[in-house]
Amino acid sequence: MKKILINEEAWQTRIAIIDKDGLQNIYFWSHTDNNIERCFYKGLVSKVLPGIQTAFVEIGQEKAGFLHISEIDRELAGHKMSDSDDDDFEATEKESSRKKHYQPMDISKIFKENESILVQVSKEPINEKGAKLTTCFALPGRFIVLMPSIARIAISKKIESREERARLRELVTSQLPEGMGAIIRTSTEGCDEKHMRQDIAFLIETWNNIQKAFATAEVGQKIYEDLALPFQVVRDHLDDDISEVIIDNEETQRKISRFVRHIAPEHSAKVKLYTGKTPLFEKYDLEKEIKNCLHSKAHLKSGGSIVIEATEAMTVVDVNTGRFVGKTNLEETIFKTNMEAAQEVTRQLKVRNIGGLIVIDFIDMSNSSNRQKLFKFFEKTLKEQDKFQSVLLKISEFGLVQMTRKRSGITLAKQLTDTCAACCGTGATPSVQAETFALLRHLKDELSNKSNQGTIVIKLSPEVFDYISENEYDTLLTLEKNIGGKIVLEREKTLSVGTFKIETE
Image 1 (cartoon, rainbow, N blue to C red):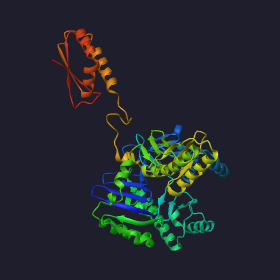
Image 2 (image 1 turned 180 degrees about the vertical axis):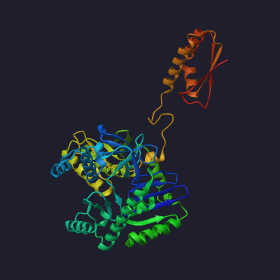
Image 3 (image 1 turned 45 degrees about the horizontal axis):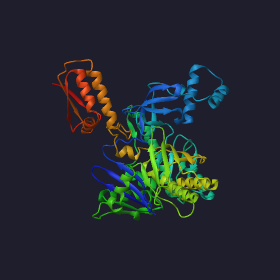
C-alpha cells in the first residue's frame, strides 16, 4: 500500500508518494514558483511559420509559447481553413465539403498574426524553449479528464473488464454535450453514476467559465489555473492503493480533509494529521532518498547499479552488475540484474520526472528467451506503476531498449540544482596542467615582443602556482630573459584554477 506525505512549511510545500520500496514520486511548490502547466491563457499570435508549421504565441511570459499544428484540434483547424478558403474564392457546397475533408492542414490558413486565441500550456518552458501550447484542451477531474474540443472517449488501459469499460463509456457519453470527449481515469472503475455526474458537471461548468473569461480578458492574461499542488496530487493519486494521506500542517490537513470529503468521501478517513517530533520526511528517511536521486548512480539491492546521464537530446541509462556475482551461472546473474534494474529504472524515471527520449543499455544476454522476458516485465512494470504514458521499442541485439515517456513539468535535477559555474554543466573542468599551459601561452604572446617590462606580478590559484613552481620554473626563467624583466608569482586563494591576474610594477 502507498502513502501520500505532505510536508508544509512557510517557504515550501513538498509532497511525496511512498510504498514499501521507498520514494515513488516527489513534488515541490513554493510561493516564488511560476508553474504554468495546464494553465489557460488568452494568447496573441506573434509569428506564423508555415515552414515548420508552428505559430508563436505571446502569453505574458518571458518567452513566447510555441503551438505546433499537431497540437491544434481538427475541428478548429477545419473550421478556420474553410473560412480562409471562402475568403479566397466562391466554391460550390460540394467543393467546400470536399476541401474540408481532404485538404491538408496548413497553419498559415488557421491563424493570422496579431490574432487572439485561447491556448493551454501542455509543457513548461525548458532551457531556451518557450512553453509548449495546445488547443486540444484538457481539464482533469476526479474521474475523467474532460476534452471540451475533442469528441472522443478514451478509457484507461488499467481498467481491464469489458463490462466495466462498456458501462463507463455509456455513462460518460450520456452526460457529455455534443462535441465534447473525455479520458476515463483508472480511479473511475466501480464509480457510481451520482459521483460521475457530479464530476462531469463540475468540469463542464469550469469550461463554460473559461470561455466567458476569454471574451473579456486582456491579451497575455491567465484565465484559469489548476488546483494548488497538494490538492492536485490528492485528486490524481488518491484511490484504493493509498492507505494514508499524512500531513504535518493542521490548517492544510483541515482543507484537504474537506476537499476529500467532497470529491471522494469513501477515502476521507485516510487523511491524518502528523504530530510527531521527528520531521515527517526524516521519519520516513526521505531526505536521504531525495539527495540520492540527484546522483548519477543508483544502487540496486543485489549489488548492481544503474547510471543515469541526461543530455539535451535524450537520457541514457546504463546497467552494471557491480558487486553482484550470482549463485549459478553468468547468464542467470545478468538476467536477475536486468530484471531488478527494470524495476529501479521505472522508479527513477518517476522520481526524477524524466521524460522525452530514453535509451536503456541493459546488460547483453545471449538467451533470446531472457531478453523477451525482460522486455515484457519492463513493459508491464511501466504500465502498472507509472501514470505517464510511455512507448517502448523491442529490445535490440545489443541489449538496448529505446523508449519515450511523456514529459510533464520540470525534472528533479532542474528543481533542486543549478548549473555549476566552474564546469558549465559538463561535470568536468580543465586540468591544472592544461590551465598552466594556457597561462604560459598567454604570457608568451603578450610579453615576448616587448622589452624592459620591469617586474610583472602574476596572481594565480594555489594549484597552478604549485604546478609552475615544481615543473615549469625553467620556462619562467626563459620568459624573463626574453622580456628583459622579472616575473613574480603570487598565490591567491580566491582565484579558481582557470583564472589569473597580471599586474606590472
